[in-house]
Each structure stands twice: as C-alpha cells, then as structure tokens.
Length: 601
Image (cartoon, rainbow, N blue to C red; front, side):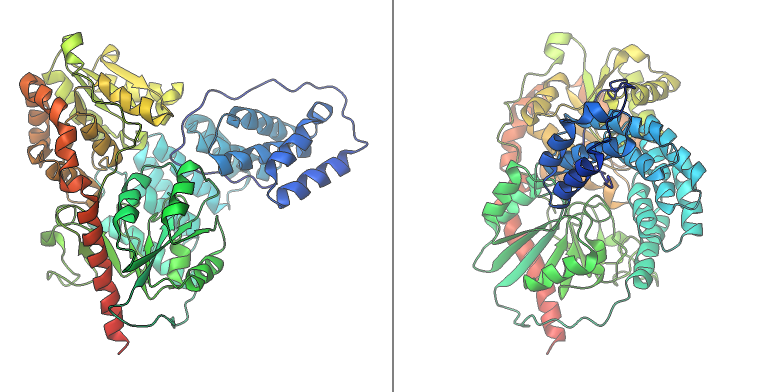
C-alpha cells in the first residue's frame, strides 16, 4: 500500500515504538492469502478490518517487510480518516522495521518520511528524505520534502535555496512549485515582488500541465437569481478555519444563496457532521484527480466557487485551474495570491490590503495584476473575518501576574513562524522587562530536538533559558484555551501573523501586540486588533512594537481592565458580527456574479 500523509496542523507525538519486533522464524504458508485479503479490504476503504486482519497474524511475520508495510499503511489510512494520531507511534515503528528489512525500497522510505513529517519529527524526517535524495537524485517530490523540512526547522535560507535549485531543474513539477509557494509565506524579508513571482510561476506551469479549453458554462446569467456558492477546501472539520466558516454559513440568506461545501481530505469528525447539516449540499471528494473534482463542481451547478486552501493541504487549485465555475475566488485559508489566472478575485479588506499598495504593473493604482496578487482584490470592510469562539471556551482567568508577581508574555503560534526576526523582537521586549517570562506553545515544541533549536536561538539573543517555557500541543480545545490563563500579554509573530491564535487570545482576555508589515500575512493582526478596538497595539515599526509591549507590561490597570472586558468587547465588535459579515460577504460575491452576467449579454 502506498502511504501518503501530510497534515501541517497535527500535533507532535512521543518517539516511535522501537524494538518491538523480534527476529523469530516467519510463517509463510498463508502469506499470499493474508496480503491478498488485507489489500482487498484496503482497496474497498475498509482499513480498520485490514488492520485487524494483519494484526492478528503480525507476530508470525515480524521479518516480512511487505506485511509490515501493509500494516503500517492501514494504520496511517485510519489516522487520515479519523484524525486520531494515537497509533502513529506504532505505525512509525512498523515502517522503520520495514525499511530496515528492505533498505533499497524507496517507496517504504517515502512512507516513513511522510509519517515523520506529519507529526513534526523534523530532524528524523530530514535524515530520511536526504537518504532518499542520495539514492534517487532525480525525485522532485523528495526535493520538495527536504525544502519543506528545512523550513520547519527554521532554516529558511537553506530551504529556499533547495526550492530554487529544484524548480530550476523541474520547472513544471506541481508539488514542488506549490510547496515553494506555501513555504515562501514564512520567509522573513520576503518582498512583495518576489512573492508574487513565485506564485505566478505556479500559475504559468499549470497552463502547461493542465491545458485549458475555453470554459463554457451552462449557468443561467441572471444577476438577481439565487446563486449557488461553492466552498472548497480541507477545513470542514475541527480546524481553525472552521471557526470563521460557521458564522458565515449560519447567517447567509439561503433564499438568496445556496451553499455547497466540498471537502477535499479524508479526515472527517463531529464538526464535519455539523457542516453537512448546515450546507444545502455536502460533497466529500478526498484527493480526487483535478478533472474529477472539476466535474463534481459542474454537476453541483456552482455559480461562484471559493477556494479555502490555496497552496496548503487539501488544495483544489488544480481543479479550479480548469474553471469548473464561471466565477471563482479565494478566501480565508491562504494568506497570499494563488497565482492562477482562473481565479478572478480574492476577498480581503482595506487594512490587510490597502488601496495605496494596490498598484498595477504600469505603476498606476488599480488593475487586476497588482504588486501582491494576480486576482482582483475585493475588500469586505471593516474586517474580512468573522470569528465564532468554541463553545467549550472557559471564562477568562485573572491576570497571572497577580499571583506570580511578574508579567508573562506568550505566543501559541505555529512553530514555523519562529524566525530570527521575531525572536529578536521578543528578546528585546524581555530585556526591557527584566523579570518577565515567555511561554511558547505549539505542536513541534513537544519534540526535544526542535525545542533545543528554539532555546538556542533565544540563548543567542541573550535570553536565559530559564525565562522561556516551551509547551507542546494540547489537543482538547477547552484545555488549549485554558492555557491562556498562563500569559498576561500575547506577542504576535512576524512577518506571518497569527489569526486564530490572536482571536483566541482576545477571547480569553489577553491583549495582543502585533508588528505590522506590507504583505497581507503581516497585516492580519492590524485588522483583528482594529476590529476589537485595540488599534494602538498594531505597531508599524520594531521600536513601536517593543514600546507597546513594554508599556503594556508596566500598565497593570489596563491589563486587568482588558482581561475582564475584552470578551464582551469582541462580542459587540465587527469581528463577531455574524449577520453583518454574512451580508457583506453575500454582497461581495453577488457583485462578482453580476460582473460575469454582464459579460454574457
């Protein structure tokens, strides 16, 4: 079985189960029948039965690489379908044994790499992918894998060098180009022109990889009729983006808009059932070929199709390149342009993407091709997001400084955002508040080797190790939000801001200080804080960021006041105004629909 697993958001787990397999004699009498039965069950999607069939005989085949590989594959497929990673250690241990037994089988090594990458055991994954590259230098997917792992290890320059060399050699490899685009968003110092060029390169390659015929759509071009809105992505499940989709679907006027949700990955959970209930139609199309996904969109009669994933996991961009809907846009899940000509608009606001920066190729304001996007920028002011807090959110706790006697800063952002620039900024804040501490929490910090890398960066910046606490991921959402009781002030990352982490911090009464840049990803904090009435904490320079964080640390009355009032302020702000947001969203997509209808007359 081919094992394929890549989820950037899953948590780091403990080390793999090593040494569980013995070296006793292997029973071979029914080996063929066993493998045939397991593969047949897997082919039908009955992975739990395949796992159980193999597990019942695994002790007889402890030295059979194919049986072990099939068993690890069944485990990984169950993980993909359920999102439950409790058996990942076992899967990794089994796959390691299979690789040891067949060292020349690169398919098994790739399976092991994907498992390690999925649980953010990046240093182990780097060793495996480099061995694959050594054995097969012509594998572009291995190049993309190595570059992505280097990015996860905060080796940004090395990562982009590997990407550049790989793209120069394989300029039409879609996986390589897509992962280069995704990773480029996290590179400190990435300017708008270079970012745009990387994304445009993907779009140009797609025109060669999937040649388009002129799209003919049967959609009736009536500008005022009820339109069918398609939302396509990987987030119709327990995921941060779901907390922005739910208020939208709840408040859209269904007499004016019919909603089709298209879920592109295998994982489904309890929240998926909720989306199925609120959507007019729900299509589960995990990892289907682009022409098939495009056909499903057409069959559903989608008038306006919105991409929610961009170049991240569960992308539908190759299908959207085929223009299955007459009007196509991108929103929410990807903080940059897609680079695709087939996507006509992108939903933002005037703070994330101010018109002053909306300059065309000829240097004049306006135009479709701007400094930052291939899509037309459609601004949904005052804020392009609407947040719905989890129902399990506990009440805000008192400021921890009341008990500890010192201020605690914190950030629960993705570890890939912990670059030298942001660590340098945070270290300046800690030096100016000598008794303060910093708490960081993310999935990768549960890995001892990655935690050591992060500690070394703070040490190089002059911050004693004892002042920085590193926490791994907390899976339960309520417990995760409870962890905000440990921090007084949240520090945003830069140049890629937090989104859900910022909303969660504010909901838990924790003010956030953000450093504003020029790219969309470095301006999301500005629009969130502005909506919550904390614009003064969105800072336009390093000096202003440090001053704001230090000033807030010294202003105990303001911190206490915010702790007790921020949640109510959010409830009544544009950031949590579901009905108002849905109205603006519908108006935005209606305008794009009417533009297309006008071209059909």
